[in-house]
Image (cartoon, rainbow, N blue to C red):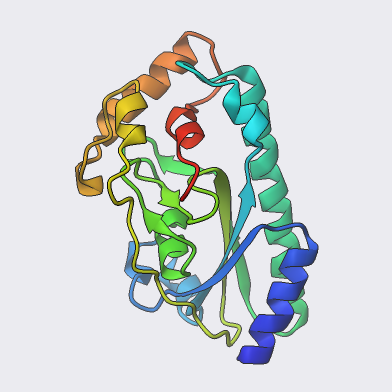
Length: 220
């Protein structure tokens, strides 16, 4: 298991990936919007993260920009391509793999996907869920995107880290929807989604993207 993980991590980092972790998913499979038949043998999730351009983020003030929107899409595309390559690498080793799209929302009202990259990132030790309802990494803050590959490859799982946002409330202050609260559990998904729809309707961006709280969250 240790050798598998070291080899896989080395390969992922060669693809210019910034974050790598492995999550034990045995206890949360029932939360996935994926066939139980497909998930039956898969007990691990390989979580990969790619940093977002700080320069693209700095353009954002009160509204998202088209520059950021383009960069956001390109980062997701890069991650999806990396996940396909990693999945193929795993398959060539004789194991199952299922890449989960970096940004494919199944239910916009609940902001839910096939599987929560954020929750898997927590289990993989990449960070914690911040007040902004995003995964926060100690070094990168929320300035990165995630993709996940599910697999039955024997891999030693990482452990969640014991950390939180502490006294930092920067994202609470800048949220244009006032959706972010002191307690991450109180995050108001509906308010956030309404603001995303507003930005899209104003043609600030061509999809439901914001980035304001991402820009302010830089880690610590």
